[in-house]
Every structure is written in structure tokens, then in C-alpha cells.
Length: 228
Image 1 (spheres, rainbow, N blue to C red):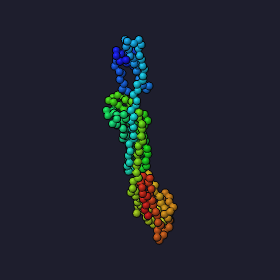
Image 2: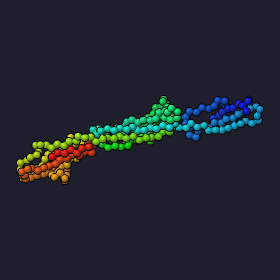
Image 3: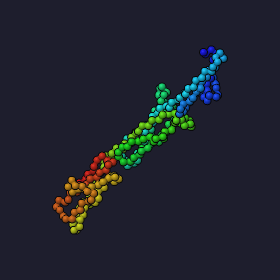
């Protein structure tokens, strides 16, 4: 019966007001709201207790993606993305809220790929200086860091070391050099089939000389460099 009825609200069951309580932030368990209606024409006071809930706002935070070519320097994924408020205003960061996050496993130097992640519990969302992270349901998405192999690895042999006057001792070519020594394995062969990191040694004169095959391999390069 609306006629002559006064409706009041309370959040603690003690202080009452005709103004409906307003809530802004998520709170575990929600907010209790007590309602009572009084009317001088009725002998009873009608009461109702409800729980009002503000649910967490969904937001997705994703680590960035970087694909680059090996050059010997450390590469890093430093960026991340996050969803912004949708048209319905039911998900994503509110436009005046600032999002920060910490990335993990986000650097590498050698060729290859790895998953980059957002560190658990590292996401912070601020409204001005106030931390409002608790009002968001944060989901995380991985990114990727890829360092592709580089082409153009080269190996050279010192021409001046290709001959030696017979003196009864064993001799071989001077150690070959790769255009990029870091991570490079140089091997030698006299038949192109059996390879070793040891430089072949020769003692006696031979009319046609001794063939020596050289190859250089490096996991950061797509090619195998060769020299004969």
C-alpha cells in the first residue's frame, strides 16, 4: 500500500534513510541492504533483507609478440595489450583506468622461440592513484618471442698455410675462421664424409697435395658454411 507508506533503507540495520544506498566497488559477499516500510494505518513494520552485488569486470591482459632475426644481441618483448571497455560497458578497462603488468621469460639472444607470459598477480589497475584491481576479473594470455636464424655464415682458410716444405714433421692448414665465431663449430674432413674438430696433419710430399674440406655450423644461422 503506497499510500501513506514510508520506505527506508539501511546498510547496517541501525541507521535508516529514505535514500537508496549506492555502491561502487566489488566486495566479497556483496553488500547487505535492509529495507523497511512503515505506515500509520498498519500495525506492522514490513521488512526485507537483500544482498546487492557488484560483480568483477572482466579484462584480458596479453603478453606481446615479437619476431626478429638473430644478430647476437639480446631481444626482448616489452609490450603487453589489454582489452578496453566494450560498447555495453560490461568488460575491459575503463577509459580512465591505467593498466600495468610484469612479463616473464621475455628475453633471448640465440635463434629459437619461446612463450612469453604475464607474471601471475602482477597486473595492477589504477584509477588515478587508487588501486582498483580488485574490481576486475583478470585473465592472462601468453605471447611469443621468436629469433629467426640468420643467413650468410662464412668460413675462410688462410691461403699462406696451404703448403709447407717437407721437414719430417706433421703439418696442416691454419685453423679456419668463421665470420661469426660465437657459437660456431668448425670441422675438418679429408674425404667429405668423416668430420672432426681436429685439423688433419700431413707429413710426406704428395704430387696432387691433400684435399681438406672445412665446414662451419652455427644454430643461429640457416646455412652451413663450407670451404675446400
